[in-house]
Length: 202
Image (cartoon, rainbow, N blue to C red; front, side, top):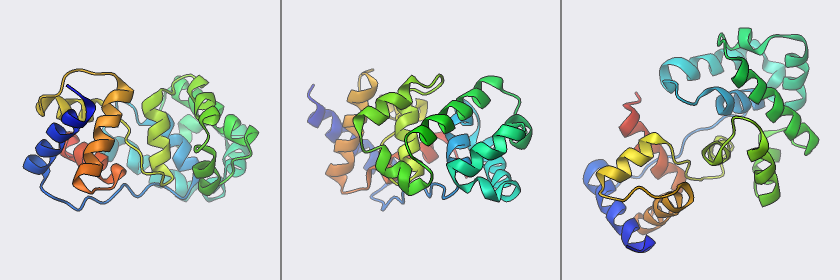
């Protein structure tokens, strides 16, 4: 089966299950501390109940961490696990490493990160950070408005229910992108609609 035929199959399932839209893309964050922590802490957690409230609290508690520079200044003297109320040394280490990488690349604001992610070598450098896979790279893009498809377990289950075979990350991402084009939807909007449906987000 070719990618276009898989995309048509997925598009049909989207219309049957989710309707014709339109599907709004995720809002993202204007606070770089929230962007970094969202990307570092969200995996395998119930987002709406566990992660999102902590990110909202972080923005209120650390308003000066809206830039990478401000975030790094905070985590240099304060414990991020305490600020996030989340005891996970590995995730904290990922956030620190990500912040350091962004700073080294001249990234300070969400707009900077949006542009930085447009270069393949930067995306490859981000993959080197422990805890960051291809899904996280695409997910970070959506947090700063790049309109990408970050394929997670929910999108995989939805695709399986559409009758698609178990295919690799990049191929399935391409199928979702093509399905969005077929249906005339924003890529991130379609992804977010599928994610909300499968995760039962409210």
